[in-house]
Length: 142
Length: 142
DNA sequence: ACCGTTATTGCATGGATTTGCGATAGTGGA
DNA sequence: TCCACTATCGCAAATCCATGCAATAACGGT
Ligand SMILES: [Mn+2]
Ligand SMILES: [Mn+2]
Ligand SMILES: [Zn+2]
Ligand SMILES: [Zn+2]
Image (cartoon, rainbow over all chains, first blue to last red; front, side, top):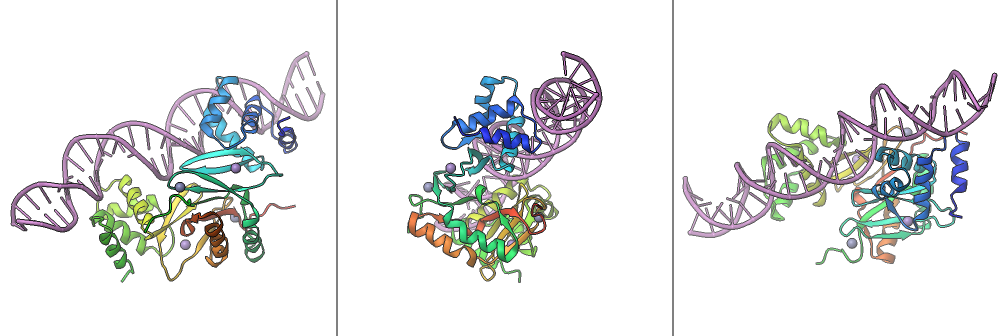
C-alpha cells in the first residue's frame, strides 16, 4: 500500500469528486519517495491520461496542498511536491545558490510557531514553509 | 533626505554603475513608506523614464535585494519590496486568505536562525523570509 | 573633452503558474 | 439505470517574472 488511501477518503469526505486525473496525481506523488516537480507529475500523468492538461495538474496539486495531503517545496523558482507523511514531518532548507535541499525537524520551528500563534493569533503554514538561504558549501568566502 | 544616499555609495563601491533607471527605482522604493509591487515601481518609474522596461525594474530590484538595499515580501503571488532600514528590521507574516501583512520583530527568528547556522552551516536569508499562514481573522471556524 | 571597455538597457521571447469559460463527467437521488 | 445538478476538465489566454542578445551608455583613463 502506498499510504494514500486515507487521502482519497479525505477528499470524498470534504465533498470533492474523485476523478481519474486526481487519482493519478495522487498516485504519482505518493509513489515518489522524494520531491517531484509539477512538470514531472504532468509527464507521468500523461502516460495514464494522454489528454490531461497541465492546468489540471496545478489545480489538483493546489487542492491537495490545501487539504494537507501534499506538501509544497519551493526549489529555485519551481514548485515541488511530496506526500505529507504525518509520521515523518519535516521542513526544508533550500540553497538559493545551488538549489540543494536539506530537511529539518519541525522541532526547530515549533517554539517560533507557538509564539506567533499565541501573541498574534497568526497560524503559520508550517508544513509548506521553505527556508531559503545559503548552504554550508555556498557560503561567501572572505 | 530619503535615507538611501548610502545605498548609492554601496552600489558604486561594489563596482556597479549608477544609471538613471537604478536611481529612479531606488528613489521610488525609498519614497514609499510601506511595501510596493514591481508593477507599481514600473508605473512610477515611467513618469521619469518613459522608455524604461519592466525587465529593468525586475533586474534592478533583484540587484538591490542581493545587495541588501531592499527587502522582498511575497504577498499573494506577487513580489513586493521596501527599503531595508537597518534601524527598523522586521519580518512579515502574510495571510494566504486575505493577503493582510503583519510585521514581526526579527528577534522571533533569531534563535531559530542561529541553530540552523550552528548545526547545519546553513545561513537563512532572514531579511527576505515571508511567513505564510492564516491571520487571526481568517482562522477556520469550528 | 574624448575613447575604449564592458556593464546595463530595451526589446523580444521564454518559462512557470493561474484563471476564465464553455463542455464534460462525477455523484447522489429518483 | 437514468437524470439533474454542478464540480471539474480541457483549452486558451493571461499574469508574473526571468533571460538572451545586440545596441547603448557609464566610467576610468588619457
Ligand atoms: Mn521533503
Ligand atoms: Mn515591511
Ligand atoms: Zn548551496
Ligand atoms: Zn487573513
